[in-house]
Structures are given as structure tokens and as C-alpha cells.
View 1 (tube, rainbow, N blue to C red):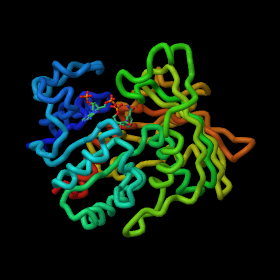
View 2: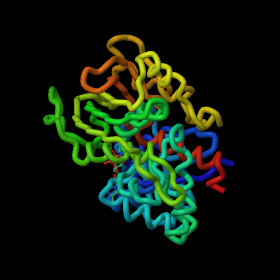
View 3: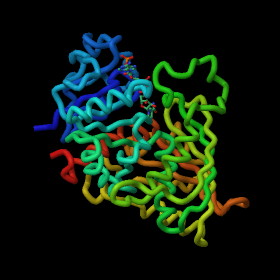
View 4: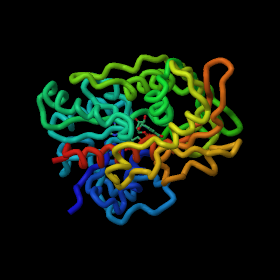
Length: 348
Ligand SMILES: NC(=O)c1ccc[n+]([C@@H]2O[C@H](COP(=O)([O-])OP(=O)(O)OC[C@H]3O[C@@H](n4cnc5c(N)ncnc54)[C@H](OP(=O)(O)O)[C@@H]3O)[C@@H](O)[C@H]2O)c1
């Protein structure tokens, strides 16, 4: 028996990715789909503008799209809701006893909401009992990070443990699919770079520090380093590329950094979670990789790819990291979080 789950925002870019990734999942089965009043009451296949490269799963195609009210016949919901509505809707579900795994920004920085990357900070799930107590309910919200934060945090995690990060500069080149569907107008992005993504730099600068922060029993103490982010939208379909420079408290070398990336793994790998990549970080040695066109689907989109590790004349070292924004940067991350919750008894 698989666990029935619902997808909120099921018609959107992230919602579709949930439905695609959960097809044939060994533990979880999509039985409910929900979206806005525009879509509610209609057959999923009739209302969705399906943009995945596999057909709509047969089990979902004929489902009736429900409104996002917490009377869905499932206790676990994945949220790919637009941020304009996600905050209130997710709270309503959690208050009604649902377990909400969200991609939206609204609750990520709440004191009692774990912002989780299972390889890095599974201990932050200790906030779940705190959240249940504070909000007086059985339900709870677990968030995954903003998509560009995901790859920065995955790369910095093992380096922070080994050499203690002090300062970070990051410039991103972010795919169009990161803006949802229909997203950025083609006339704005074709042959162009847009050096502004609303709120993105602020999210990278603070979420990274929460993820790499310390669980203190009732809250998270933010990691003690500064991040300066510059975010750009580029004409790439899928995959966020990030150029990162880092200063460390301890002396290190390119070889040690490479080793820290290569040796990085965590609970998803140890527990053999169904969506876990064999290695969360893949080091590429070619001088011109990683590139989104060739590398973004490595490990089914669940790994981050690092390359170009070299000294930095201003800070200490610099490198490039790439990841799939709607898989490991969104739906795949939530699904991995759900698998971790199940493995640790939080779905019982
Ligand atoms: N795209 C990415 O790479 C990415 C990565 C990480 C996080 N995120 C976050 O994930 C969330 C979804 O992003 P997306 O790219 O999938 O956006 P999207 O393609 O615009 O989809 C938004 C979804 O929200 C639903 N929605 C909109 N207004 C609603 C309302 N008033 N009530 C209920 N549902 C409503 C839409 O339903 P209708 O079709 O019925 O309008 C649609 O299903 C956002 O918060 C975004 O910041 C996105």
C-alpha cells in the first residue's frame, strides 16, 4: 500500500514535476490534485498545460482538480503554490492536521519551520515537535530552499564542515523554468540576460545561513558567515549555474576541497532513500564543465555538479556549481524530504 498524497499547485511548473517524479514512486501515490479556482472542478488533463517530456501519468490524467482547501482525502501534501497564496493555504492545511512539504518562500524563515536538505541538516527536523507545540496541532510544515540556494548550500555544506566558511560571493545564471509557466516573456529573454530576479538575492543570502545553521533545541542559530548574491535570468531552459568565491577560516587546498566534495554524503545515501542520488555532489574535471545543456540531468536531476575549482585572488577559492532547478531545486527536494520524514518515523 502506497501512501496517498496531494499536490497543491498541481498545474504549475513545480506541480507538474511532482506528478512526473511521483509516477511509480515506491512509497507515495498522487491521489489528489489542487490548484486555483480557475482550474478547480475540471479534469486535470483538460486544464493543465503539460510541459513535461513524458505523458501525464494515467493515474492523474482523469483526477478532478480540487480547490486548495484542507478537506483533501490525504494527510500529506506537496505544495508548488504561487507565493501570493501559499502562506495562508499551507497554514490552513497544517492546522487541519496535514503534513505540508513546501517549495514556496512563505514559511521558510519561520522560526519553527525546518528548512531541510537531508544530506546537510536532517537534525533540523527536531523543529517539528516545537512547531506542533507552538501551533497546537498534529500537522506541520517542512520547507525546502529556494532553487538557487539549494545548489549553493549543497556545495558549501561539506566545505563549511571542513574549513569553516567566512565569506561568500555568488553570481547566478538562472534558467527560465525557474520563473514558472508561462514565466518570462520570450521577447524579454531571447538573446538577453536579465540582471534581476525579485527577492532572489535576499533569499540566497539568508536561507543558506539557516540551512547551514545549528539546531538549538527550539530554533536555528544562523551560520555565522556573510553571503553576497547577484542573480541573473538567462536564456536556458532548465538548470541554474552559479559562480562561487569563498573565504575560509582554515587554510586548505584545491585537492582538499575536491576531496570534501567527493566524500560528501548523508542520511539519504546511508538509508538508500528512493530519490537519493548515489552522490549528492559530482565533481567534473573538464575545464569547461558543468554546463546545463549536457549535465543538468545527471543522477536524474538530483545531484549538484561542481567544477572549475581553483584559487581566487580576492577570497580563497572559487568554483562553479550547477543543478536542476525544478528537480533537486524544487519538487525532487520535497520528495526527498518526505522520504526522510518517513524513514525517521515522522509520517506515522
Ligand atoms: N520553478 C522553479 O524552478 C521553482 C523552484 C523552487 C521553488 N519554486 C516555487 O514554487 C512555487 C510554484 O512555482 P512554479 O514555478 O510552479 O509556478 P507556476 O508555474 O506559476 O504555478 C503556480 C501554481 O499555483 C496555482 N495558483 C495560483 N494562484 C492560486 C490561487 N489563488 N489559489 C490556488 N492555487 C493558485 C496555479 O494554479 P492555476 O494553474 O489554477 O492558476 C499553479 O498550479 C512558487 O512559490 C515558486 O517560487 C519554483
